[in-house]
Image (cartoon, rainbow, N blue to C red):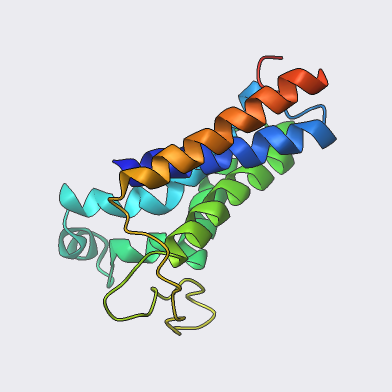
Amino acid sequence: MPDLLSHAFIAFTLCTLLGLRYPWLTHQYVTVGMAGAFIPDITKIYLLVDSATVGNLLGVPFDWSAVHTLGGSTVAVLIGVTLVPSDERRRVAGLLALGAASHLVADALLLKASGHSYPVLWPLTGYYPPTPGVYHSTDPWMSVVTGGLALGSWLLVRRVGVDAVSS
């Protein structure tokens, strides 16, 4: 759970600080960015529905882990964009993509026994980049740090007078 909370805090911080530059980025849009940060973890649905089951149902090879890559997240963002009115699609696409990208970058920093991350840029390449091994996904201190950054960004925005979070 600390991992998912950290992703929400990271997206909140990024979107809130961007609200200083873009006045249209109100709390509703910050929420969209935070939702985008959850997209790569849609892959966790494998706990309920096995990849083989979906593959058999669709009649094609299928693996949930593809969602946790650049290609899979891009497809999920594009699906999400179709759910909003056409005049909102550009902003929603950008914020969903920002949230998903922040998630993928944060996960590329995870400590792995192999010393390599996952194929983040799939389908462009199947390369497993080396990871600096900054933290484990279960480390609670990461939520404390990212939560502190989120609180700091919220306080900064309130102090500056741009109410990007509660407009």
